[in-house]
Amino acid sequence: MLQINCPWCGTRAEIEFTCGGEGGIVRPLDSEAMDDRQWGDYVFMRENPKGLHHEQWRHASGCGRWFNALRHTVNYRFEATWKIGEPAPAEAAAYLNQGAAR
Ligand SMILES: [Zn+2]
Image 1: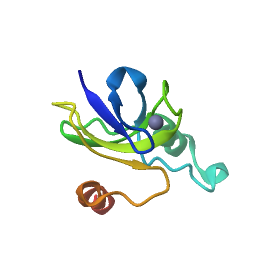
Image 2 (image 1 turned 90 degrees about the vertical axis):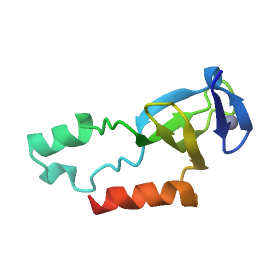
Image 3 (image 1 turned 45 degrees about the vertical axis):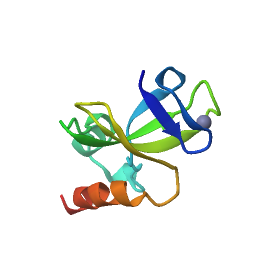
Image 4 (image 1 turned 180 degrees about the horizontal axis):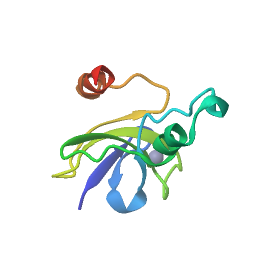
């Protein structure tokens, strides 16, 4: 069974968690100025990579808190998990910095 590390509770079984989709999506500050295409991109368009992916997860059957995760979409391996609002650990920061350069 897949094990996931909750940043607050420690390692628990996958069945206790729910995935909330792509992580790091920030609501636009000036949404009134956006056209329909830009708003649609914000609401619906998400990355679907084969490989590492920044996601948000919730420990639904545990502490109930949300956290960030870096997960590999092919082998499901979690490379890192960290609390919302905290800096990403080194193993995730390298991946996230690549995304900022895209
Ligand atoms: Zn937890």
